[in-house]
Structure formats: C-alpha cells, structure tokens
Image 1: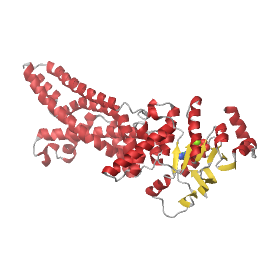
Image 2 (image 1 turned 135 degrees about the horizontal axis):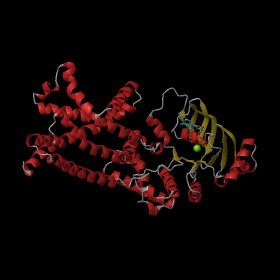
Image 3 (image 1 turned 90 degrees about the horizontal axis):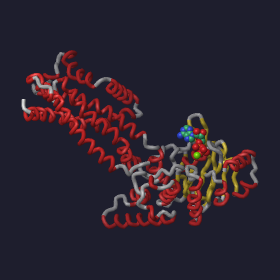
Image 4 (image 1 turned 90 degrees about the vertical axis):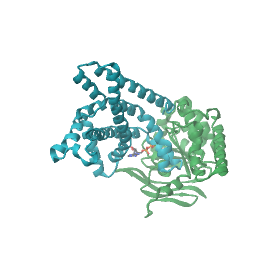
Length: 226
Length: 261
Ligand SMILES: Nc1ncnc2c1ncn2[C@@H]1O[C@H](COP(=O)(O)OP(=O)(O)O)[C@@H](O)[C@H]1O
Ligand SMILES: [Mg+2]
C-alpha cells in the first residue's frame, strides 16, 4: 500500500473518530450538568441513585462498560443490539451508537464531578455579597457565580477533552471503524505495521489544535483571579 | 423616632444558642460600635439584620415598620426578604468583591439590575448613565477614581475594602453595617479604611460597625455595645464604656485587647 492509500484509509477512520469525539462532547457536557444536579439535590432517592451511578461509572474501566453495553442485551435478553429495529439492520451504525452511548455516560459522570467541584470552590461570600445587594438567586448565579465556575473548570474540562480524543480508540473493541481499526486492517491485509504508528500523527495533530484552543480560552479568562 | 429597632433576637445553630435575646435601637445618624470577644455572636447579629440568617425569635423594625417577625405564620418569600434587605448595606470582613468585574462594574452591577430593569431606549440610557456617574462619585469619595478600570485582584486589601464600601453605598441603604472591616488587612492598611468610614459619618449616615479597633470605636461611635455570650453585656456612650466599664467581663475584655493592639 502506498503512503497515499494508507492516508486515505486513516482519514476515513479518523473522521469516525472525530464524529464519536464531537457527539460525545456535545451530549456529555450538558448531561453532566443534569447529573450534577442529581448528585447535589436534597431529594435523597435521586441523590443516592445518581451518586451510585457516578461511582460505578468512574470506578470501572471504560472498556468494560463498552462490552457491557454491546454484549449484555444479546447475552441476557437474547436480543442483540445489532438487531434492534432503530438501527434498521445497519451494523456499523449500531456499533457506533453503542460506543457513543457508553462514552456519553462515562464522560457525563466525569464532567458532573468537575462541575460539582467548580461550584463548590466558589466562596460563600460571593453569593452573600450578591444577595445583600438585592440580587435574586438567579441573578447571583448568572451574573456573579457562573463565569467564575467556567474559569475554574476550564483546565479540568480541557484535560478530559484531550483524554476523550485518545479514549475513542477503545471503541475499536466493539468494531467501530475508527482510525486504529483501519491501521489494523492494513496490518492484517498487507502485513505493514507503520500505519499503526502513523495514526499517532493524527491524534497528536488534533490534540495540538485542542490545546491551542483551550489555551486561548484560558488566557481570555485569566483576568479573573480571586 | 428610631430608624432601626431590633427586638429580642434569638438565634441558634443546632443546639448552640448564639444570640440569646438582643435588643437595640438606633436613631438616624447614629454610629453604633459593637465590640466583644470572638465567638460572642457579633457576626451572627449582623447577619440576622441583613437576612443572611433568619432569626429564630424576635422582630426587626425599620422606621417603625415591622420588616421581620420570626413569629409570623406565613413564611417570608424571597422577594419580601430581598426588599427588606435593601434597607441595609453590609461590608464584609473579606471584601467579597466580584473578581470578574472591574471596580466600576462591581459598583454598577446590582444597581443596574434593580433600577434599569424593564426600561428601554432613552429611559434606560438615562438611568444607566445616572448609575455610572453615581459610581464615579462614590469612587472619588473613597479616593479610588483612578482605579475604576482595575480588577479587584490588582488592588491592595485596603483599596478592595474601600471599593466594597463604595459598592455598599451604591444603593443608598438607610443603615450601613460593617463586620470587622479591617480585620483581614495588614496593620498599615487599616488606617485608610477607617478614615473612609469615619468620613461617612458626616453625611448623617446610620452605621453599625463591628470592630476590634478600640481607638476607632471610641473616636467615631456615638454609642458602644459590648456583647458577650450572645447577650448585650453593657452599652453606653464611648467615653463611659471605655473609661468606666461596669461589668467584670468588659473590664477583662478591654484590658486583654489593650495588650493585643
Ligand atoms: N453557620 C453557622 N453554623 C454553626 N455555628 C455557627 C454558624 N455561624 C456562627 N456559628 C457559631 O456561633 C458563634 C458565634 O459566632 P459569630 O457570630 O461569628 O461570633 P463573632 O462574630 O462575635 O466572633 C460561634 O461559636 C460560631 O461557631
Ligand atoms: Mg465575627
């Protein structure tokens, strides 16, 4: 295989990687907020359930979670995910959705903990200063607290985001055709190992871009210091 | 006529009774200094007056109107509490400026939300510019005009506290409360803050100042209250309280604070 052919394969795989990355991020960032409300609510049944969920997801390997989501319906209910009508017999789509679902759940849990930490790190005095100036609770949250939270969580969120780029490779084990999948195919069909190393260039390049964006955001908010 | 009456305020946290029946009354223009050892309930009293805590028992009246009665059947709504709060301003020990806003914006933020709400076009413009110039005047008054574009973190502690005082004045509260305004400051910075507070007295402002600065209390206050274990142990005019303390507790408090400062 020529360099160009391999590049084409890997690009095809990397587009799937990027799709998985982007959808996971878009869905898990807000879902993390919902989970955070769950883990901090005073309504104890919800609190216990969401905390248990977050604890389990954060305490087990993502790879295991992928396998559970992918295989358990078939093993326990004899109704393989691949045969679910919503996927209309489209096997790659079913596999992609399994991976996406797992990633969204997993990352939402991590984000919920980051949000929780970010909100708890705001001193009580900030709320009180707003209140004694006659602000409503929502004014205090949106005008005083929110931006400070965003600034506080930016670094951990950027860390998670960069980890996510690399974690997408795990989807390979349920046959999602991400970039490593194609490098493996090249190895198996043409007996060449170098495409495997070549994939690293894609990851590095994309992470360089993300790092650049996050650094700019961080610099933009650097004027906020308490 | 009293501008503020606090009647029989009680407050407990769990089993710990922190305020055990506080009564006080203030005339317009009075400057009340509250002294007392740490843990005697001074902060809790200010927080009850500013509704950051709800008193378990007692009443708070402003201009003879009951604005809080712990006995009332109906729970106070957020909006009621918010309206009552506007009678008071509170300056915190830790300043609590908003770090993401400039000094000027720290002053205008709350005023804009209160006064420009629902306004449009020319009306809004006029109100906003009135608020901005009010902020300018107050910054001038606390001697920080040239810092209006700075962020809080760029200021010294003393400057931050002066901004916090200006911010509290923006809404023209009838009664301005200070909770140990200089306790978080290096000794060389306390003077500038105390001078600002002292100068406010001239504007016929009613103030309550919790302080450990005995010199200041003696010089600026029109009346002094000594709190101990959740009650007012002794009160009177400054000369009387400082030169002729009646209770043993006040005597030992004064002699120990002389040693420290
Ligand atoms: N939110 C709270 N929860 C529990 N205890 C509190 C709380 N606030 C104050 N206290 C207790 O109330 C007592 C009086 O505190 P405070 O009013 O801060 O005293 P001071 O300002 O005179 O030093 C202290 O023993 C303190 O531990
Ligand atoms: Mg205190």
